[in-house]
Image (cartoon, rainbow, N blue to C red):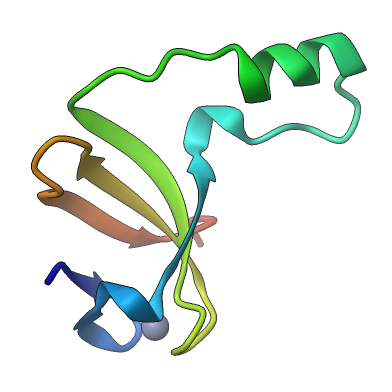
Length: 84
Ligand SMILES: [Zn+2]
């Protein structure tokens, strides 16, 4: 079981959290549709470290930025997002 150390709640089981997307797939409100499609559906999907946006859905409901290895699921960093 993967534990995620929420900066507000402490270590919790990953089933309390919801994966949203990789940090490079966050769009600004003024992006044109073709660019949005490219960012969301034609992006790289490399193995290894990945910066991801997660939410502690069944806890404090805060957004978090995780640095997760997509092969091993090791977490290098868990921080509140957006940064204060
Ligand atoms: Zn939390």
